[in-house]
Amino acid sequence: MGKDLIQEVDEKILQLSQEGYALLKQDRPEEAIIRFEKILELDRHNNYALVGLGDAYRKKGEHDRAVSYYRECLRYYPGNNYALFGLADCYKAQERYREAIEIWEKYLKYDETNVTVLTRVADAYRKTGNFKRSKELYLKVLELDEGNPYALIGLGHLHYDFKDYRTAISYWEAILERDRDRVDIRVLTAIGNCHRKLKQYERGIPYFLKALEKDPHNFYALFGLADCYRGVGDHRRSLQYWERILEKDPHNKVILTRTGDAYRHLGDLARAEEYYHQALNIEFDSYAILGLAMVHKARKEYREAAESLNTILRLDPENPKIYIELADCYLHLNQKEEARSVLKEFFRRGFKNTHIQHLLDRLET
Image (cartoon, rainbow, N blue to C red; front, top):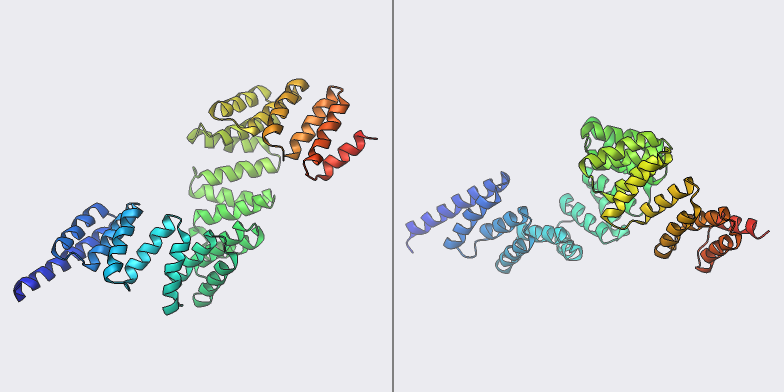
């Protein structure tokens, strides 16, 4: 091949490569793929084209195809960082976290100050449940880049995953303090959820309200508000938000059951029953059955309530509330021995509960 022809091919490859990567930046992966495939017709092992194809298919969510191109690139160019990072990101998207970690840890041996890689590997360790290593890497990011939002958010998620909600709040509040009105809605709902988990319902409400100002249809904000109002006993307000969710998602059995609960607490037993049945028409739900049992109890239909509660007990033997409600039904039916037997069964199964012990003690005196 003559020099002029080689130069012409090189220029063509450069042009196609520039066009391909520009199209990727514009989120036009299909058109980018055409450019990169044309490069491979001219140069079968071109690293820019192989990485570009990997990036394009990764953008499309076709991670298996993306992996094949990144691996092919690494066969010929083992040290290509773009192929390595692309491959690791694919593994992460496929929830193959250990394989992603292996790639990123190798890179960190050569550059332990790369904040992007540190946060990604910390995220992956969090996903695999390695609290210690994940926290160590997030904190290292904060040493290198004080206030790094990805590290702060990651630390929040890490502590949330391990049920340390107060510490999670402290990291997410740092993001909120910095970004104020520009804060990501997910930070607001995350803080609200921490307060919800801590049963600090009143403190969670303002965060969910602020989230709804940003997105009036956000499921997590609507759910959080409904649950917080339920937690403080304001069932009328709670109902408003459950029904707003049902406007968008009318077949959500969890929300149908929660809506039924709200109507039951408000004394509208007929509407409550209607929503419980709607939930059960979608799929069996022990909470909907429990709701129906409580409707029967409110109507003094103790035998029907006991039947429903016995159904749940067979499927959910660990829930102490079921034993308490069932024993109460038997007492209303003047079946004291049955009530005592139900409470004893709870302890025979190896469970412990102070309230149930007190109830049993009272029945045996």
